[in-house]
Amino acid sequence: MEETELLAAAREAFETAYTPYSEYPVGAALEAVDGTVYTGCNVENANYSNSLHAEEVAVGAAISDGKDEFERLAVASAAADNVTPCGMCRQTLAEFCGDAFEILCGTPAEFERHTLGELLPETITRAHLDTAEGER
Image (tube, rainbow, N blue to C red):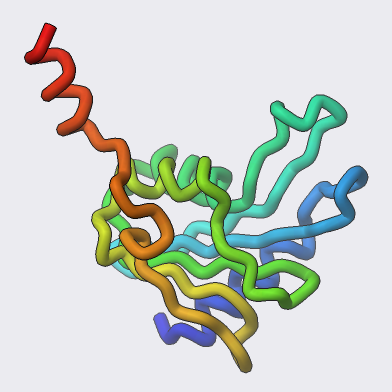
């Protein structure tokens, strides 16, 4: 899928966001290695910690469909402010993606390109857990 199409899918996804508290709709479009695209939007809750982020909704949809290898992600907000995934979503992506995983942020007309490794250096991975367990 073209970058601009993936960003357009992310922008379309935020149209269904449920954001009565922040009024900050975000959409995400996650492209699996086979080309399938999974979208997600943020879903807020009065108890903020129970809110879902667009990226994690997209990852959940992909995992539920049996996909766990991803090509890239596009993220967009209604504010068109080139929002990047938050730290929690970056860590969720790191569970399935390497440092070179591409993240596009913005609109089809104007966007920024990042890698997961740039946005989340020194990621906590399974290897860290295996090492820590071996040291016990």
